[in-house]
Amino acid sequence: MAWLEMEDNIVHLDKVLGRLLSTVDNKVGFKNTLIVLPADHGQPEVPGYLSEHNIDGPHYFDKKLINKKSLFRTLKKRFGVGEQLIKAYFHPYLYLDHNLMAKKSINREEVEKLFVTELEKLDGVYMAVSDAQLEKIS
Image (cartoon, rainbow, N blue to C red; front, side, top):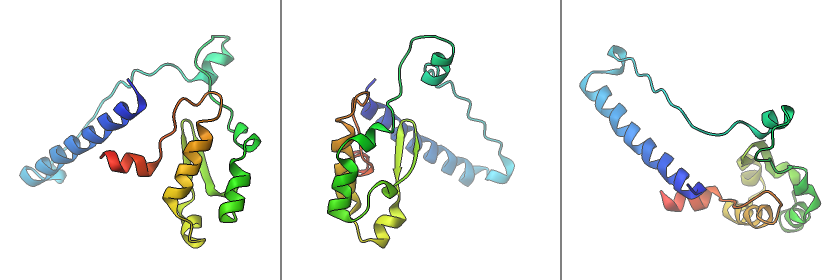
């Protein structure tokens, strides 16, 4: 299943769970309810774990590769800030610092487009999708 399809499924599941929880709250009330949502995500083992055990598997891309590309130079040139725009990275998600963008009056969609373009140039990145793109889908 492609990433966008998985994201779409999650958005759909979120809406279904929202309706379910709303109905439970209205009919029974949360104080009278115990909700348990078990899940089996069915994902392969984390690549780092596989590598530690000499098992060939999927590989993470190296976040340090971002520095070797033109992304930060372009960000500095266009917006006056560079690497500080990355608030956190938890594979496979890269989080931008929205407070910094607001403080510097930087257009979020423009920064996201730049990140998507540059990230898709990296080895190990098949596709990058921004928040703005996901918001248009849902």
